[in-house]
Length: 295
Image (cartoon, rainbow, N blue to C red; front, side, top):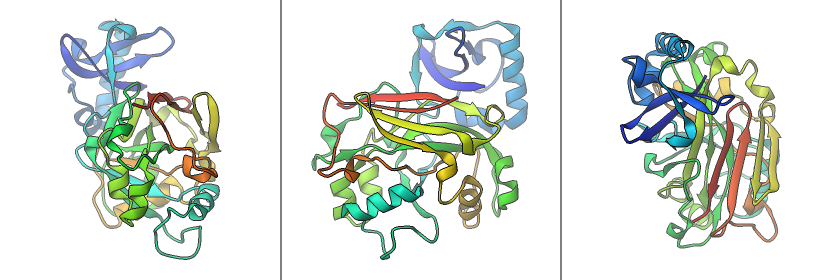
């Protein structure tokens, strides 16, 4: 299923998007399911079963053109967990860019590099990335597949990791590169308000039999900048879940952005930073396209 958060004159709630018909099923109209995505995810298989029954009933359908879509999790309960330098070619391009202030002389990390993005940074597909907040004028894009955690836990082994994956969405890990470099850490440069476009939906894990076969494609003003398969990750999804859950308890609705691939703006000579009026589109099927103008 394609799960979305939307709003109209009746307020914000969640629904199931039927892309073929251009409609969505308003889960609040026919069920007593939560109106907020994280609470719905916490219901696990029971929530999905009830949502499928609502879709099958045919009731509560709305034209998607008549509602406003939000990020699927508009305000995460915690910071978004992120992985740095997790594609081989990107690790090399970033290492050579002069922006990388992480420790070590080697381009390829020996262990996953983790950082986070502030919840206030989340915006929906279609909303402008507020580049005017970056007073250093060095805003960059990073297309990424994000994992949505379902059943939580601590000490999750690799072999069990996919049992804890609820679904997948897309994140643009927008970054103010000069802030990232000058502060010698990644949090400030990646946590500006509006610097985490997310969406357009969450696709449940049952719709993705083999996540490693998904293809990530990023364009800027129609020009292809990034093109990679999830199979090219240095540290795969089970490794990331095992690494994180070894030290912290993962909970329903937690988000893990798995890293970006070759082709970010800082990798060009000279760098191709985003400017007002640009449009960044990140496509991963079957999730769809996350597209945002630059404001």
